[in-house]
Length: 115
Image 1 (cartoon, one colour):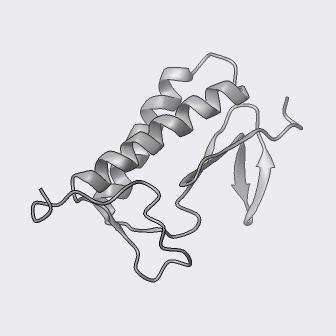
Image 2 (cartoon, helix red, strand yellow; image 1 turned 120 degrees about the horizontal axis):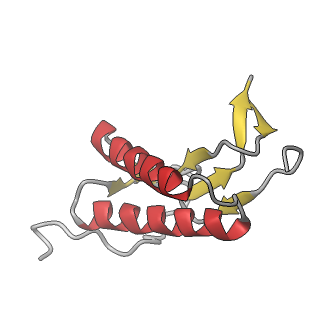
């Protein structure tokens, strides 16, 4: 599998069975790389990035020893999308008004003013 690059792409998360080497993705049978919010739809704080990275690590650790398959990557990506939605609804993440497209793909943010 070391020559095969698997990827999972959701709206806000891209996962690759690869490592980054000189800005290039190099396929890897035992490493996952996370590309978070590639379209810059959100404004991220250090705290919100850290929460997603911690959850990513937990999911990778939980999958350790198992097969890195399309299914495994999709499960991790879906779980991270759910966390991003929670961050947005708690007001810990906000939409980027300068994003290329403003489509509120995760729903309207829930802030105390809107509740």
